[in-house]
Image (cartoon, rainbow, N blue to C red):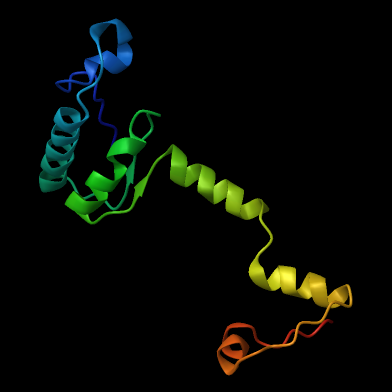
Length: 118
């Protein structure tokens, strides 16, 4: 389901910046009201905020709907995390380089299980 926000009161300045600054609280109330109205009539499992102006309202939507909300920030986080070395991968790398780390507590042992190189 796709819902446009061009007619949302206060959101018109996104399309036409000459109309002044956006009243964020007014727009937030309007977006939350619009989305909750949609949820009353249509089953939705997640929300995707396509516009780059919308991440400012994602937390309000998460709070109001208890649904996962995806926006440009969460999408960038997703792609960025795919490029980052994970914690266990970094440990395997250090062990393979001959760098050993002595664990100082049992709590660390629980967090960092032994790594076997195959």
